[in-house]
Length: 324
Length: 177
Image (cartoon, rainbow over all chains, first blue to last red; front, side, top):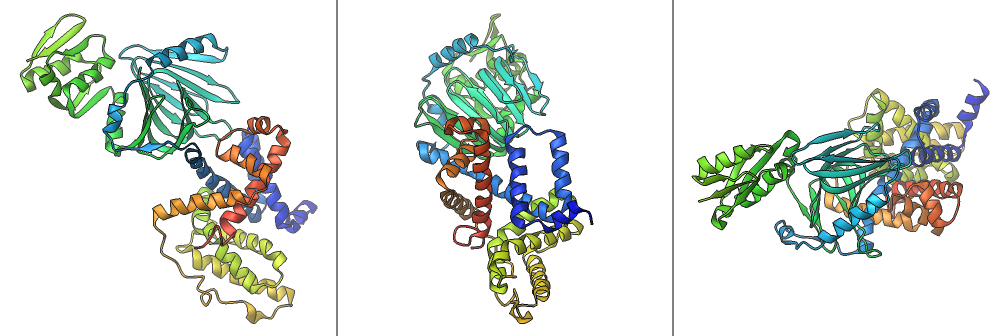
């Protein structure tokens, strides 16, 4: 037995644990290369005692991540309400969004990149760390991806995030006063003039509303949770997986309606098309529609209105008016 | 058996037994200063065996290994008579227990974590909270606390070890029910 091996055999468990903590700190808090990983693997391969000590500390440290749920307890004010109420949340902050945009242009940095999709557009951005961002129609998004940080600003529109978790480099999405910190996950963020919706499909994210510091509103989201927020209010509701899948149907170029009022369906279609559907009659607006429609085809939608409901469709160029 | 599966099993099935295991080792072995050492050896043997095949039931498996290890230790020490090694079955330690309700577990988990955090020295606690509650990188923790990153790493590493001991080993605030 060589001297090195002899030392390992006789290493005190306390020393092993100290080394395990060194490794864990390096892995969690500093730049981590494949060479570092290889070195860690070599250390682990030397003894099952090393493996035991490392896995144990790593598991305890991972468990402590649940502590981030303590933030809303300190900040208070996180409300959970039945779905439906969220829809009634009044629009407050159209002005805010504009201000944020102005400031961000002023601050533009060299390693910052801006991505835009036109109305009806759909774009996928892939990053070298394996993360992906999928932009929906009429969206403006800026990124600053460096070795030190991964920051994304959603200035307008909707994006679906698939993030490779790296606790040393948190992935942070900022939308106005709202901040979403990824904890390894897939989530959807939709921003319009008045409010923000964050839907979590997999993994965990932490949502923070920065507007009210120091009484910041934060919450840890579980899959199925949907946050609907303005600067002043915030609700967390839960949606079944099926409903969430429907919200993501735009990724396949589809809009799925399920007992959806025509007015709301038209609003959805209008997000993707330059020619806008206008519903002239409030009684028509309340009719409900089911089915999947191509998001880029106003025609498919108006054809359905015509044949299924016997409604009048009038094409006026920029607008297409549906009435009885 | 691939290592990630063994690790997942070890974290899920074995580590939660730590409080009961420590209780058993302390009841059976006089040299209490060696208990942490013994525990690590038990874990190492458990991990080695699991790489061949992950046992169907973790609890009896872990306690059987612990018992063998104690017997070997005591034989080697020739200090404590053989008979003092308790039978895990008699202590009621080797039997499987029904899994607690999930909601209770989630509440319990947060309570345990809070208790664990409370046991850290103040500055160490501050660093751990900034790292795990605020999810800040080391550089930012150093800036907020007005210390250098080396000191941050010292606090965090101490925090990691105390958290593991409290979360897994301490019967009052962690481990077995």
